[in-house]
Structures are given as C-alpha cells and as structure tokens.
Length: 385
Ligand code: SF4
Image (cartoon, rainbow, N blue to C red):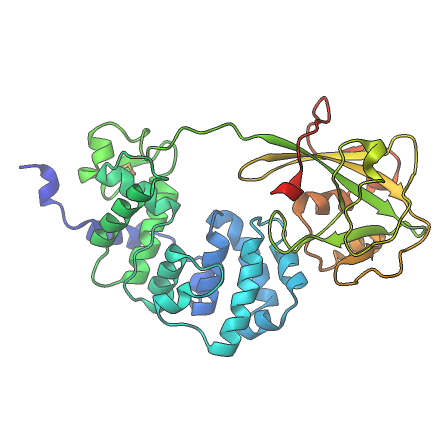
C-alpha cells in the first residue's frame, strides 16, 4: 500500500501549514469586506501580490467605499490603474461598481459572475474569501499546484485539462474554513510551488505529490509549445500648439489601452508621411502639421504586451491653430509643466506617461526609453488589434 494513502487530506495538511506560514497580513484581509476582496481579486488577475499591494492601498485611500468608486470618473480610476496594465480590468471595475451601487453587493456566485470583469475564478475567490462559503478557485497558481500534485500532464491551456483540474480542485476543497483554504492554496503556489525551482522540501503536501514522486516537477504543468512573440512597429505624434501644450486623444473604449488618454497615433511609419495620416476622428477638417526641425523623430520606446512587443517612434510636429470642433471628451491639450508638477489625474499608458515625464523631451534631443532597433519596419500597428 502506498504511503500516500496514510496521509491526512490535502486540505488539512495545507491549512496546518497556512496557519504557521501563510500570508495573514495582506491589506485586503484587514478588514476583509466584499468590496475590498473584490477590488483585490480584480487587481490580482494576471498580476502578482507584491505588485498589487501598493496599487490596492492607493486605490483604497482614494476610494474607501463602493460608493466612492461608483461616483468617481473613469479618468480617476484609470489614473490610479496606470502601470498595473490590462486596463480593461479598471474599466470593468468602474462599470461593476456602478451596477453594485444601484443593485447592492451580490452574495451568490451567479450574481458575481453577472458583473463586468468577474470570471469564474475571481467570483469563486470572492465567495470564499469575503463570505467564507464553499467555492473552487482555479487561478494560475492553483492550476500549477494541482497539475503537479495530481500529475496532470496534458497542456494546461486545453479546456479538457482545465476541466480535469477543476474537478480535482473541487475534491481537494475542505468542508469548512473556505476563506483560509483559498488563501492557503494561493499562498502555496506563490511561495513554495513556484513556477521554477519549487521548494518541495518545505511543502506540506509533498508526500503524495505525483510530480515529485515521478521527478517531473520542472516539466509540470505541461504547456503548448510557445510561438515567438512578434514585434510590431508604430508611430505616435507629439503635436504641440503655440503654448507648447501637447495634444492627447482618448483611445477607443476597447482594444489596446482602451479608454486611456494617449498621443495620437499615425498609421504611417514614414516620418514624412505622418502629417498626412493623423487619424484624429473628432476633426473632419484639413489640418496642417509642421515639423519643428529636420528630425521629427524625437523619441523611441518598446512596450511588451501579452501577444506582441510594440516598437514605437514618436514624431514631433507643431500646429498654429486649434481646429474648432474638437470634442473635449475625446481630445485635450496638456500643459506638460503642470502635468509634471501635479501628476494630474489622467489615465495614460505607462510608456506615454514616462515619456511625458521626461524633461529632456522639451529639448530637441531624441529620447529613448528602451533599446532602439536598427530600423523602422512597416508592419501594421495597434489599430488593427
Ligand atoms: S511537492 Fe513540490 S511540486 Fe509538489 S505540490 Fe509541493 S511544491 Fe509543488
């Protein structure tokens, strides 16, 4: 008979370990209200605890209650989200806050799932942590722990694998202490059963871990073969008026950097063509952009998204007149000195924020925020994604 059959249940061993070694001082645990747990769980989607803590604390200082968040503008929310990435989360959080302000905070899994930006694992984490009710979470950490412990070796991205992991995760869930158990399995994945070099010697469920018994800890969870992340070229326009204010336009509500303020994007990679290809929708009038010097390219940066790396150039132009019919909800002229001084509450993509904060941008010296490639290519840009 195998030694594993004599082990106490998975959850009992995990909870004993959690009582001593788990994380009991996370800011959303004190107090552990549904509002705070929900905000933290949305922030924790795709993002590690260490990164989230500061964002969460700033968010709670500004929006201590659900009503505060519901009454805030989208710009304020996105400004506090800036740098956390995956901005659809911030937009959905704001939309869901407004729904909850009208309808009340849900208490069932189904009602949480009906809110924008709340998927099955997030809803389960909220139910378990905020209400101490049974629910099965399956975030990235939990998938890794279960796949290793149960020895599941099919690619973790496949829906059949996810189904299998879900059923095992449900079997492992105890009949009490749901909030603690949920935190415990997330902590195990984050602190011991880590992606590389897990600390199996300290693991409370090591005795019957299949991956460990079969020396496949580094192989599991199995993944589909990765394809190389492509690089896409893009151009942004730094358009300044006579007061040297910078034109910002709001990006479309969905897609990359959706709803954020940004420098206008040009569909052309060719600096000479930029002024002919400004896609600024609110204006339907001819508009002349004048290069401020022979070299219009004033900055370069790279930014990594999940599926591609953006390799962007920024070209500077001047305008002498403001087109009259611009919608102030979609365009604004930003005073850079004031922005740098007060960090005005604007939701800007992180690389654009870094660029505008760079004081040498005011000179004619080119600014590079990341290693520069040799050439500008001609691949399609953001607007196609
Ligand atoms: S023994 Fe190692 S691989 Fe298995 S669950 Fe524990 S930490 Fe993960």
